[in-house]
Amino acid sequence: MMGLGNNPILSHLNQPQQEAVSFKEGPLLILAGPGSGKTRTLVYRAAWLISQKKVPPENILLLTFTNKAAGEMKTRLKKILEDERNKIPWAGTFHSFCAKVLRLDGHFLNIPHNYAIYDESDQQGMIKKVLDNLDLSPKTYKPAVVLNLISQAKNEMITALEYPQYARGTFQETTARIYLKYQQFLKESMALDFDDLLLETVRLFQKEKSVLQKYQNQYHWFLIDEYQDTNHTQYLLTKLLAKKEQNLTVVGDASQAIYSFRGADYRNLVNLKEDFPQLKIINLEQNYRSTENILQAANQVIQKNSSHPILNLWTTKKGGEKISLYEATNEEEEAQFVVNIIKTHLLSIPNSSLNNFVVLYRTNAQSRIIEETLLHSGLPYLLVGGVRFYERKEIKDCLAYLRLTANSQDQMAHKRIEKIGKRKAKKFFSWLKKKPKNLTSLEYLDQILVSTDYLKAFDENDPQDLARIENVKELRSVATNFPDLNQFLENVALIQQEYLPAEAFEIETNQPKSAITLMTVHAAKGTEFPVVFIVGLEEGLFPHARAIMEKDEVEEERRLCYVAMTRAKEKLYLSYAHRRFYFGEKSANQASRFLNDISPELLDVIKSNLV
Image 1 (cartoon, rainbow, N blue to C red):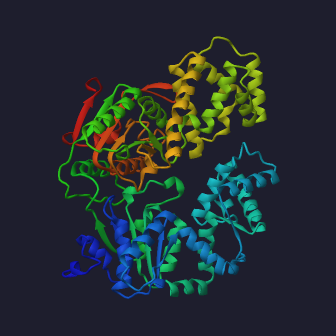
Image 2 (spheres, rainbow, N blue to C red):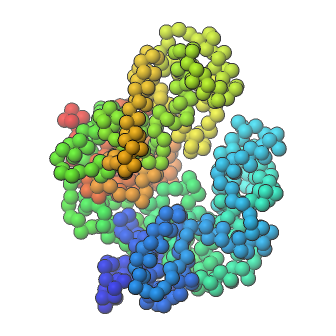
């Protein structure tokens, strides 16, 4: 590799990055840890091929998972190649590439060039139409759950005609009938859903060799980001396209594979070696984001996984602050600790911004106590990828029931209850006529949930429904703290009122204001912050109770923790509560197993009585 560093494209890359960027020909797997400059490496590889190997840009295909990531790649490439009289390669998502292929060549599969693409709302509407056609109840066969099963099948290249042989049990067997009719209705509407875009493109390439050859002749170089997030169909697509020239470069990290619930399979990284025997593997382990102490702790957590390759991250940022571990008495103390630390940072560090702080949690329902504590302290926050707790639909539904229980003249509550559904409204009003007197807020809420069958509308196997159930259970925690119903509703109203000033400020100034970020760990991937709080590190919460019985699921929870820890640039705070009101139940919690993996010398343990 001597002399490569003098090249303008390679001069500011480290040695493994240079090796990856300048790799000559053949299949290449770049295993890139968090903060190691993986996207940069992929973009510079494209620039190298164009400027040094004189590959025509139209012969390069750049694939990623979001339009935002594709846009950033294009912007970076334009900047690198600004002195070159070159166009940039086509860069986009798997879905946008497949949509383009099917517009041009879908007619081989009788797909019209002007086909419609159905989004999630369209798909649910179509499933409802199918259920009506088959005389099936949408309560028994919830559209979201059925669509999830159909999506899983399509991600595994299982068509509607093939699905019956894989169906097990009455629900899946009925889903097979729904799947078949759903595809029929899509065809009649000249429409494809998002999973069809991938599946039909792979089918097209498998069936029509001349079409596959057309794209193999057009694209000689394939560069793919976030390969651990690919599903089976995307893997097959990659394999088919790159089979001829073998010039495949993929970037990924199995330790950051946290989207299995979407059909992603990190084993695709391992399978590459079987389908591309000449595969060269280069590790990017130098981290440019975090301090040495943070990386050591993160490495210790992820090294307990045994089913995938583990990178050993390192940095030139030696030492750094110890990781603070706060042992709270309860969840309120934990939330107050977060607020106190942020206020201390703001007072002690000149020009410190609230934008420097993020609070990460495993489940959406955990945001409630953090939100309330921040609101009471007057600190503005931004909730990423979610709706504020008291504005979530299921919470507003439950509050409407409780408001009408407290005040039978509340017209707005009455109007919302009518909108929830006629059957539920009828059951509620029947209960209301004979409601017991002098119950606690929690007792009223529980009776309402039972009498209306409110929670029966949700399926625990659907991640979105599970989140809604958890939110309702979290409302029970609030009800427990305010036994008097009027006081409970007053507290909620006051908290909702505190939402308004920050919202109004944002609208009036039209400027991005300084705010603390709150988000789930799943939403945090791809982000970085100077100061990171990870709260609720308890057995049953993180790792989640639904994951602790299966090895594969525990490993995914461990990867989630690893992703969370490696968001931190300068300071990492971990916390757990000995007792927690969670989902309306008081529980004594054991500290998360992930905390036991971290060496004591890396931790600064803070007991609750010291805060």
